[in-house]
Image 1 (tube, each protein chain N blue to C red):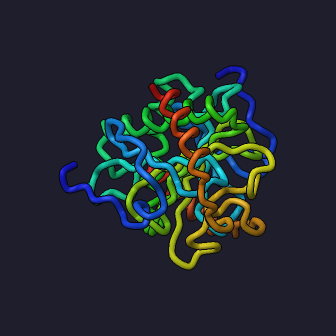
Image 2 (cartoon, rainbow over the protein chains, first blue to last red):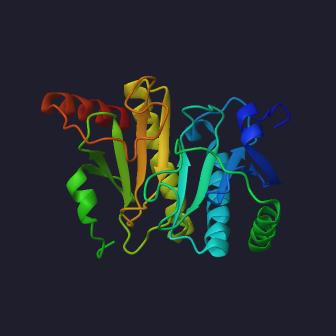
Length: 135
Length: 135
């Protein structure tokens, strides 16, 4: 983990909320959807299957822990989970709360329009509720 | 598993190639991308976190087994893995081989244009190679 370096685009587009056992838990700088990203703190990995079996199991656990918390605090219709990486090759997993009528529903969030910044108070309230649900 | 019923839209849009330990392995009827779908044979489940912990672990194993085989036979630049379910709520996981210049690259495949049927010989050759890589 010592040689893990976060991709510059992930660093620019999201903020680190906390560090889980394996992953950085990050919040996208885009208020259109409650949109989290998990980044395993391993170097040189772009596909989930390149992780060790133990890391794969931990990643699954962390994805689902975060997804449950996100569903709980948002009441989302559906949680979208995706590992694409066509643009940013460093392995990262999106966990997004979706509801009917949100931007591009029922299509995917990726590649749709432009990010809209969070209102700082709304962002802090969201982070507080998320941390509460994860605690 | 006895009361598992495949969603009608998944049945219409994809063909079953085989049954793994947990999932049906299905091929989308869309030749634009090598596009597989894993459907856990469990009833009433729409989120990965609704599976039992054992099923979650098996799903992770089956996703990665299929992703490795798909990467091997296609030489894909990137494997895209996603569980969205905004339209079809029955839990299903997409595993898609992507390469530079393919339709909508580097954007996602979901919601882009219309499916293009496979040429039957090309489809059979693909399935044979996939089965070989999974064997």
